[in-house]
Each structure stands twice: as C-alpha cells, then as structure tokens.
Length: 399
Image (cartoon, rainbow, N blue to C red; front, top):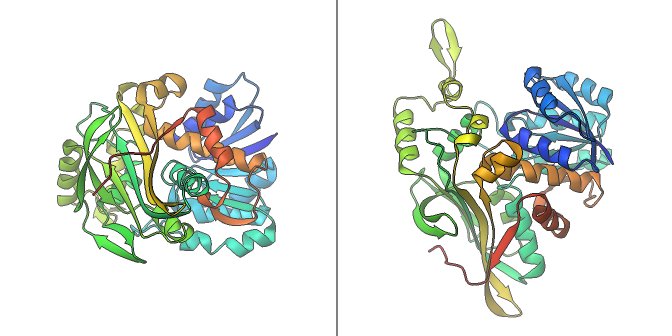
C-alpha cells in the first residue's frame, strides 16, 4: 500500500511500529527516525525479517530543513509524528513544504510554557488545504479514541449530546514508588496544571486535583479520579453541536500524588531554567532523566486500564445514556509488543489513524481533529488491532 516515516522511538512509537509491521499490507515500508539512531536500529533489528521493509535515520525533529531533506529522500505517504508535542509545528512545517500527509497523537505545546491548545495547529488549516494534504490531529487514545467514540455516539446513538464525561483509569501497578507511564516531562506538566472543564459555553478553571470523584471501573474496581484539563475537551466542545458540559477525569494512586506533591514543593517539577554548576538546567528535564523510562515498565506492570466516555443526551425526543469504553491488560500488551498498556493504548490508535489516511478511508484536505471523520472504519479497526470496545446503556454516572 505505501510508506510511512515515523518520527520518534519511545514507548508509544515502539508500539505503533510493532503494529505497523503486523499490518504489512498497508505499511509496506517504514522509516524509523529519531535523535538517537541507535534506538531505531535496535528496534529494526528486533522486527526485521517480516514483510515490512524497515529503514532508520537520525533526525532532530526541530530542524525543519533536515526534516524536509529526509522526507524528500524517503518520499513517504505519511509522516507519523510520535515525538514530543513541542515538535509538532516543526514537523507540520516540513510536511507542508513537501506536501506530505501528517498525523500526531498530542497537540502542540511550547517547550517553555505549560500550556497546550489547538490554536497553533488549527492555524495551518488553509495552507494544508491549498497543498492538498491532510493533518490528522490527536490519534492516540485520549485524545484520539475518545474523539472517535464521540463521533460514533453522535452518529449512531444520539440526536443531541448534552453531557460528556471522559474517564481514564489506569489500574496497573509497576512496583515503583513513583514513575510515569508515558513521557515524564509531558505527564507531570499535564497533571500539575490547573484543571478546566467546559460548561454552558464557557471554560471553568479549577486548582490542580481540586475536584475528586470515586468510580467503580469494570475489571479494575473502585478508584479515586481527579478532574484535569485535557486537550480533546477543546476540540470536542467545538465539534459536538449543542454540548452543555464536557469533563475529563483521570485516576491517581495516593503514592503517586504524595510523591508528586513533594517534588512540586522542592521545585523539581519546574520548567524554569536554573543555574547548576555553571550550566542552565530545567528541573523537570533533570527529573525525567532520573525517573524510570516508561519503555522499561512493561515487564513490571500488572493490572488493567479502563478508558471510555459516558454520554447523556436525547434520541427521538427521549433521554438517553451511553457508555463506550476499552479495557486493556498490561501483561497481555507486554507479551504482544513488549510494552505496558498505557503506551499500547496510544500506539495502536496511532497506527490506525495513519492507516485511515493511507488507505483513503479518510480523505479531507486540511487540518482536522479525529472526531471530524467517519468513525465507523476506525471503530472496526480498534476491534481488529487490539483495542476492542464495550458499551453499556445504563452505566454508573459521575455526579
């Protein structure tokens, strides 16, 4: 079918690359490119010998001329951005210059400001339209599958969605006192920021972890969860007509929260540069260097994730509730692709999103969030490629 250039070689990228190799009829060739080429070579050595042709390259994802040169040399059908959110715009610039389709799993945020929003990427819409290419934003799980779940609910179950709660539960245990299940720098910036939710046409801001709820998750059990701001809230508030409220909740254990608070109190989560032994360092980046690599958590992590969306609205003039979700087992993920479940639930949707564009299932020129496409082929692909979904029409609600 075609070729994909995959930028990044961390835990999520590793899962996506494994799934691309499994899906060799679509991904006939892939090039894995990262700042550290040895990581790409190591993964290639592990996966070589199948039907997908794998090559590797060294790249600084902030170096637009170098990106353009690599894209022109490899000539991919799509660039899969599985690097850091700070690098989104540089990679989009390179795709625009080479007229190559683009896909990512997380929206842009400046490296020096703990703020993430879609405005920077949405500003590319007309230029991508004029170039005749597509940018698919947010094809992970949340954002990603949660957006597809929303499009599916609106298409098949509701005339009008009024309320949406997104629940992200990780019931896994890796045995460390403190570790993050994806990039520590991104994870800690996300959970230590002020919370925010959308209600009655406006954004309401909360203090970090101020709003707490309990929920009994299938196959995981009762967990405490906390209201966070998450990027898909911005696009879903825009793309779900008549929505009255959207909230996002994520579960955290007490050990995680205690350690995070201590690290915050001593300044280790700061993104402001400090002077240390004659050099400028960023405390959060130093902390990332000493924490366990998320890619190393696979063999240690046991338990399950449960992530989904609870919708309330109207169908044929009657009130309706609908819950669609996925349960993922950490050890099953590790046995399949050598990864824990959090990376798996992001890496599989990354492959599926790229597949949607490469096969032409999704073909709209411009910049789009994932909920703006037909959800049906993506929902089918989730069942096929390792993230089967379940549904309930009488779920426990969040007050």
